[in-house]
Length: 197
Image (cartoon, rainbow, N blue to C red; front, side, top):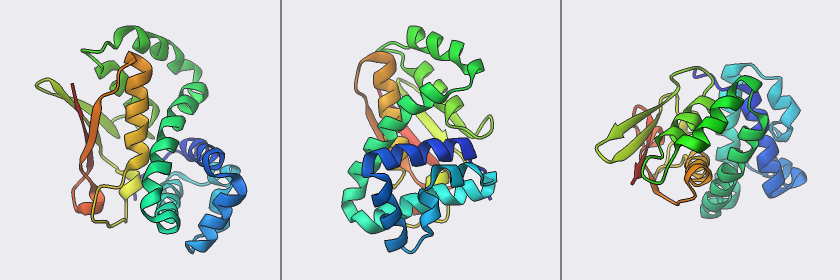
């Protein structure tokens, strides 16, 4: 079972509760057949890493079940808002890298921003990796927490997609075409996000 940081789960649930309302999130969970306790950020923070991974996927599945196609927009916004929370909640040791990234990333070279996403959104080093594809970039989510145990007809890692878009805009002031080109929910080994420069 992949491991997801309980700290990241807490930040995610807080962000989702801000977007949808704490009471509404409990209703979403119960209506979709999941325990309402998953809507409690502190309960999520108390889980071990494998249980946090399952909870992260289950919460997103509950959102898709409850909101249908409307879940995409909500989860993209949550991903964008999650980026600012990750920056604010980053460990003290990551703060110099955050400041450096904002200075190094440019419109022509947004890679430092993706490297920072990989660092801040990984439970372990190497969970997310960044690769250069000629002029484009590829962020690979190896454990693919959002898609773990999920099945769909289209890529469904909308929180990660929103997070990447917002991180790139934060660092460069420019919007990029970001697409999930491979998703574990569609049978791929891992989820991959292509950034077209």
